[in-house]
Length: 266
Length: 240
Ligand SMILES: Nc1ncnc2c1ncn2[C@@H]1O[C@H](COP(=O)(O)OP(=O)(O)OP(=O)(O)O)[C@@H](O)[C@H]1O
Ligand SMILES: [Mg+2]
Image (cartoon, rainbow over all chains, first blue to last red; front, side):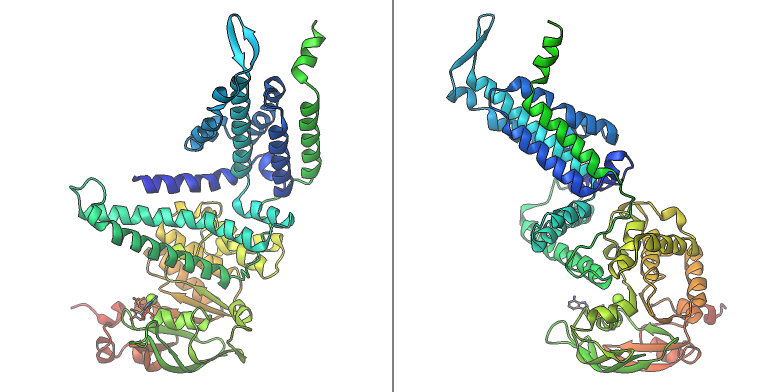
């Protein structure tokens, strides 16, 4: 299997995850989308030194992962390319913010170090939340939820078709790469002299294919408005669950749970 | 029911892929469209659903095909395209099957029920929840045929339906086609398939209709067929 094929498989595997069956999968996409956005906003709103408060927030993705039967390691595996970027963002903080906040033994912990950790946590938490949304909701449903939030139609269709187009393009790369290699067995990769025509072909072929798919959609009544009524039954209590979840998130935002628990025992 | 008058089309300026094609197909007729590679069969089918804009006029049930009537006409004509990879765009087979009906206003449970029945009729219920990218070419062909039939078109157009099918599924398809009383237009090189499923044949060469007649007349005309890069159907060849 070549790299492009692997990438395409992984993308399609997301579709497969999204069609599994679990309570999370059965929630209506709008509730899920809103809860996710709410969660991310709350996570981002924490003060840059508030590690302790922030830590508790990891509970929510963890709960959702375990209910949805998708393992957290799947998330980190799929996001292995993005994660380092998120981590990188905070890396320079220690150099800017050198105020000492407290000491652990003789080691002085500066504000920069703490804010680096919170920033990374914020990034990772948000990624985990977004991932579980995408992994439990087909892209069509996410798009339909976005429409309900009045995101412009053209933008939503664009997102939808881009998502599909990437898959198509990867497939084409995989096929072309294989046919190239079958006829150039001794080469290690595609020779520079063929890059131009390879790329040109790739664009033409994937455009052709995308056009055909778009035509197929049109032939079956697609009129630019993605009218996706779900093939799977939606949970009637979605909104209630979403509300409870948001409430819990809020509670964790404004009450410092760890210190509350701590005070119970002292 | 379907009427073409002087329909012409060229992909590029120098060569006409359809050259002044005129014919009429009545309700319930079963028409085979045959011709060599590149003769213009797929192009002709595409023109009937307005995927390409042609010169001349195309009428379906007295509706003249134009941008305004496009969706009306497309609702009447179900088109199974040559490459089923391009036909299926949803994650699973069942998702794909309900896409069309729902778009045309059918309720979800009705669409699901219809789709499930169609899968049973075609004997491919096991494909229902399979992922489109994980089924074989022939399975995909059967699924894409099911997808189109679920939309209950008045006219069924198929481009090389038997190309990827094994003998069993080919037979299933032939039997099924002979059971449903739709108007059919089937483009194929599989002349035995045409012989089993059609009454009338249109022979196309370089974008022109060069013969139009009963299936028994045209498919037994060895000279005509061979002049068009075709051969007698195997069942009529006899072995010696
Ligand atoms: N997208 C395109 N751009 C330019 N020319 C095309 C395109 N598609 C088809 N043609 C040309 O139009 C002519 C008719 O093609 P068409 O696909 O209708 O043939 P066909 O009868 O369906 O052949 P086959 O049996 O191989 O499917 C051919 O000469 C072909 O080269
Ligand atoms: Mg063709």
